Image (cartoon, rainbow, N blue to C red; front, side, top):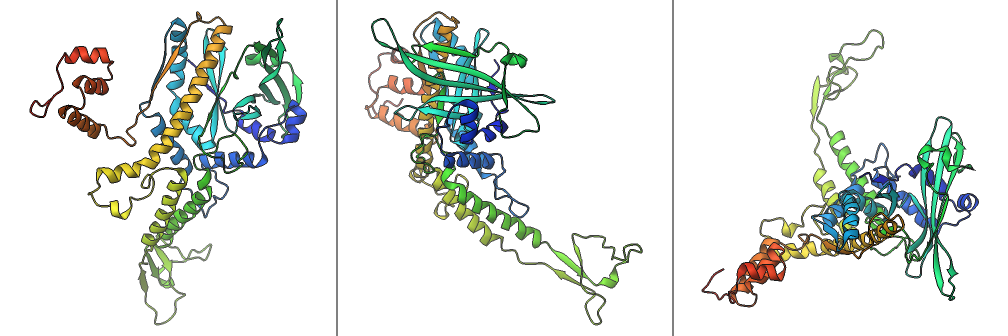
Length: 478
């Protein structure tokens, strides 16, 4: 099943974020501050290794993408989730598993930029999903709990002469009234296409029919759906306090509080590179040792990386002199490692995730307690991200269910979602297994409870396999 990423819209969106452009072109106002727009743009550049401070002198450690990648890996490691309960659930499960197969990069984009929107849509008999990264959608309304309830999504098509831009807007209208005076929600989805010449930037252009772009020809310009409680998209928000704009319900990047530290780490890393570059061994040779080019009148130096001109033929000077500088890489590395530790603290991950292990941990005698304490910070961060991801996936499947009903894609029925995340970030399964064996041996836990936990069986299956054996005692073994 195809799953589209709204990657193309990024260039257009960067020119649409101004309030005046939005107000004029869409008749809407972006519910996001200038500070948040600037921050999202910076996080996005850092993620693709184009931080504004990089230059010929300052090289990148590529920390931003490494941090986001590690958070995504730990969040989705051995993630298992399913939809069960009915024939409708079987249909949703098929659509949902296509999303799960690509969930790690999706989580990485969200971690890097503060959030991401899942937007399902009907295509034939299937429900596909668009992913709109934080710099590819425009929130226009929030509810009292800070959830996005209105949003504009962008897509575009480039031709030889110009650019077509499609703006898809989702928002709730004022409710209608039924015959008894009760309120009925109204959810509006509009699609408009704009065209502008290729040499014009910063403007959407003028409105054109959707049919001018073949792949948009079947899109309905406007739909109003009734009876919806929530929007037909899911916002996966990073669960961190917004220190950029405390009043904004938008999420922030995993490295939002570490941007300045990452900048300093890049500088320190560049100093390390320069230390090795400038500290290369050299052989200073008298100028008379080299032949002179007849055309340029310059000395012909056979090994330019190794040899340098010592003098201009002065008397009583050595013919050559070897120079082997003393490198200061240890001090520079120590400073870089200190910065990496601070970055780990700011990103909510354990010391040693990117830095060298602390000195008191450098020996092989790390205790289980010490290791567990080191992992606690990462575990707390990952647990929060997993909770946010689960909330978003539940909202996504709810939206899929709504589309399945309206498109009559599968018989109606109830469904239940199951989630299981890996907890090995902080829990050593082998150690826990031994602890549970001790509990069984001491008579605190029944053998079937151990089997059910270890094999993932339900109570009835585990009891049936173990039989009616009583609790074990120390002399019985297991």
